[in-house]
Length: 249
Length: 249
DNA sequence: CTGGAAGCTGTGAATTTCCTGAGAAACGCA
DNA sequence: TGCGTTTCTCAGGAAATTCACAGCTTCCAG
Image (tube, rainbow over all chains, first blue to last red; front, side, top):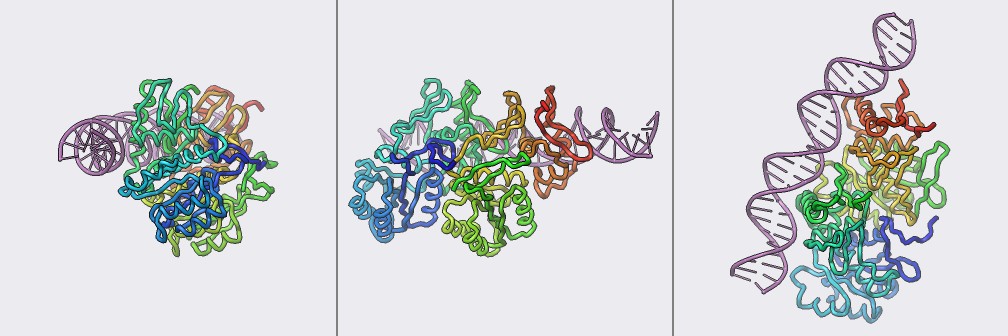
């Protein structure tokens, strides 16, 4: 009845640790709104989340929580991001870290860090991006059970999360970054109606304040590239949202 | 926490908690008429309901009531909706929340709310919509989730609440949003006569002031699409209402 | 058999929702 | 810096949906 399954609440396949327990992620940011937002979204992935508001708390929590991955803001009140990283590494030498950083402060410091297999996203980020990067990190770190499953397939449409390659019926399709994220979100929820609000919340960055019809616009772009001439896979449910499903159905 | 389903003697599927006790829902709104309306409708679902009129009361009640889901008006007298959400989350990190919000306030403030798996409906809402969304949230918040839970079946007629797809005898049928909600209401109460007043109260928003014969109209639409030629499933009980049941009977 | 009540449905108009072209602004890269 | 690409706003138009109205049919009581 309540047995552990490999199917997440969304009906997608879920990352699990080798022993079947949920993946653990530690979120470190001093802005409460950010930790809340991330905690929510990552819990929804079926992961176990703890959060900390500063470097000291992060190291402490890490020590007893033993996370499989850490989301770490580089800008913390009490400690420099690098210092936190150092101490984290002393506790958990192999844990992969996803850095959160301001847009402009990227190049200099992060570049070297990600060489070790870590990754980063810039603020403001989209949740799809964070989730995707985290999944990648966890998958590559070997903490998760199911390895090398980075390809989403819906009908004759495939999307590779690692190489960012998309093709339909074997034919390669070039997508822009936003188009790619939108399609990934759709494909991670096949045959499910996703409202424009859900899509906006998930695919666009959390501070996006624009018109909601960007979703319509990008759906329109995607259709041009994905459905173009062929049997349509992206469908509108008027008054409800959009969904993707195999063409033959 | 995980929800399971059982079938009541009336032939109606209801959500239950793992230990067999009824699902608990906390309703938070400052308008008494709204909390009353919702409490009534949700109790009718077989759920256990508590209500609160402000943020403080909501947090207090949540602490001891431990609800499985919360219906939360974004516009409360003492606290901002987001503030209430924050405190609720501290008490119950994983409880799903259904937000009630004014129609025009959608764009600005909802951003980010559906990201964590929460959902919202705009005022004025229809009860069917609230119930359906709540069922979805509760279902998805549980560890065990079977896809079939989202599919209603009556005879050879099926309705998928996730994909919003309807088919009879395997043949897909396109329904508009209102038709879909009406059919869902009928199918959730098979073999039961539903009066036009009941239907109006559940399927149309609570402030609907139009002609009562919209129900007849939409029943007519549905028949054209569902029964069209085939053995009829939607029946009129003159002077009483309508009911749906399997064709062979 | 008949009249009224209840229910059914065609017509059409108002409204909502969605799609998409055009162009401005922002971005990335050389 | 300059150029091509990407993102996004705006607005017009197309299409779908909702609903009122009114005439018609069906049912039933007397």
